[in-house]
Each structure stands twice: as structure tokens, then as C-alpha cells.
Image 1 (cartoon, rainbow over the protein chains, first blue to last red):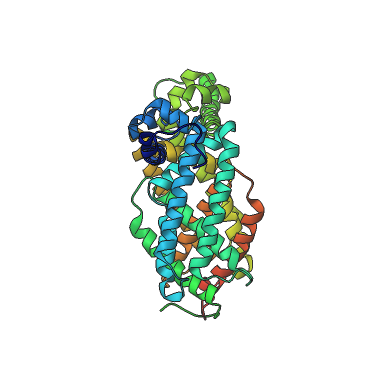
Image 2 (cartoon, rainbow over the protein chains, first blue to last red):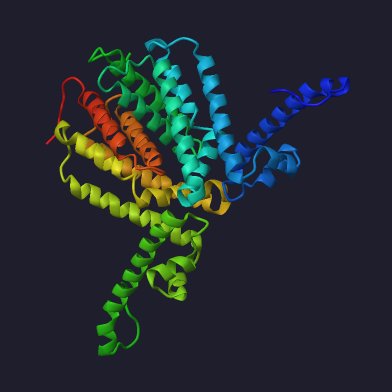
Length: 216
Length: 216
């Protein structure tokens, strides 16, 4: 927000806030369009110009917000990942016990299906081939991964001071990522639901720590 | 091999078998070069011509073996996946019990790191964008997936008639795939080892269950 220099006429003042709102809305439209574009067309088909057109924003305005292609797409994946994290926390305002652990596992797995995962996957794969993208995506991936792990620990009510709890949650998130990959070419929802059900049951035994607690 | 028609001179006969050997060797070189190429340069940078050059094979010979780019790369991923399956079975000639379950899980997870996984990943991602590749890769993926599942069930000594056993093994393979993805941009070996250890432990509890631990 900061200070505004020079004389400001009443009319300008009235326009100032809406202008900032518009700028924020433009940025948001660009980020959302970028993720959709990446998910649909992959890295090769995703440029600032294509995204600007999709978002209904001039190319100049797009470049003002995101000077480079790398800026735009890494910001886009991070933005949408944050949106999803917030939504996930809102879904379970309280730490989950065994009762809704199945729902939590299903919601965590859902993070890895859909357009955001497809977009992120395209970005990862492109980054594995392109040096100038690699560093930024690695960093982004680490940040998003840490945040997702934190959320998973909270929502599952996992006590990470217990041996194996941390690795159990990590493995669960790896499984979620793998399930996302399995869903890339075909609709894998039915199988996924059975796997989620079984592993949510296994987690109950591990995280609640009554060894030998079994299927209900 | 079939019958050979017409009069066959002694010299021709002597050359026949080596020629078939050479043809098979050429095919194999092309397949291995194709996987390496896909792993390093992605789908966009992988053409029959590039692979032929890498394999030291004429473009005509390459096209004789694989008329289209799709033929070459799907055959390559399938070939290498089969090679790896055979190697994996050879590593554990007997059904595993709890004793070497950790080793089996580690070996299964290893299927999803390294050049084959990178190559397959590039192929999947390209197939998700390209209609003409999609059907073939989906079919290939299903075939390879079934075979990997069968091997995992055998090596882990899982009794699929027990409720949840099938989904447990599936989830494990999904986790392995997710771990492969996590290894794409950075060396994730240390974390992966801890996750493998913990999940191998979880499997022991599930697959051995209460009584009825049965292995050779």
C-alpha cells in the first residue's frame, strides 16, 4: 500500500484502491490461467502470451506482473497450492481422530488429482530437463512439500515424537502422489478409493499406537 | 524362425542365423537408446532419428524395426520394464517372508527410480497431452502395472484372499511411484530409505496378520 507522492486529486483518490484491487485481480486471473494452461498443454505449450490471452489480459500487463515465463508458472503453481492448503485446513478445523481419518486421507489424496497436480507434474518434468527451471522448481517443491507435510501431521493427529510416525506420514503423501500419477491417463477413482480405505485403516493402527488394532 | 523357401546355398545358410542375431541385437540397441534418450531429453527431444544416431544404427534400419515414433518409444519402455521384472524375480528366487521383506520393498521401490522411471514418466506426461500416444501408453501402463503387481504379491508373500491384502500391495506400489517422482529433481535417497524401512515394517504387521504366517 505504501505512501502516495505528489498532489492527489479527489478523483484519483477514489480510483486508487479499485486500481490496486484490479491489479490483484489481474494477477490472480493470470495465475489461475497459467495453471489451467500448464495442466492442459504442458510446459511446451505454455507461454506468457498464451496465458495472457486466456486470462483476457494484455501481454504488457502480464509481463508487468511476471517478467519471465519461469516467474509466471512457478508463481502459479505456488499460488494454487497455497489456495488448496488453506481450503484443506478449513475443511477440518479440528485435529482429526480415528473417526474422520479416512476423510482426511481422502482429502490429502485429492490434493494430487485434478488440474493442480497435472500442472505441477508438467512443471517438474520440464524442470528435470531444463536447467534454468530446475533450481526454482526444486525450491518451490520443497516449500510446498513441507507445508503439505505439516498439514497432514496436524489433520491426522500424528505425534511425530513417536518413532516411525514421521515416515508413515511421508510415505502416505508419497502414496498420494503416486495415486495422482496413476490417475493421469485414466480415471482411477474406484481403485484409488479402495486403496485409500485400506491405508486409512492401517494408519489408525500405527498413529493411534495400539498395536494389533484391526479392521472394523 | 519359420521355414525358408527356395534353394539355400551353404554360404547363405551359414549367414542366416548370425543375420537374425544381428537384427535382434540392433533392435535391442535401439530400444535401450530410446529409453536413455527419453530419460534425458523428454518426449519433445526424442525422435527415431536421434535414437538411431545414438544407437549407431542407420535411420532406414531403425524405421524398418519401428515404423513410427510411437512404436519405438512404447516398445522401448515395455522392453526395459520386462528386463527389470525378470531381474527382480531373479533377485528373489523364493517367496519372501518377513525376514527379507525390507529388501523386497526396497527392490520394488528401486523400480521407480533411475532412467526407466524417468523415461516412462516423460512418456506418460506426453501421452496425457497427445491423443495419438494416449491409447497406447494407457494399454502399456496397464500391462506393466499388472505384471509389477503380480511380482510384488509373489515376492512379498501376500495372500490376496485376505481382505485388504490386495489394496495394501497396490498402495505400496503407488507409494513407490510417488517416491520415484520425489526423486526426479533432487537426490531423495536418504529420506526414501527411512520411508521404505517404516513401510516395510507396516507391511509385516498387515501381511503376516495374526496367525497363518506362511512362507518357504
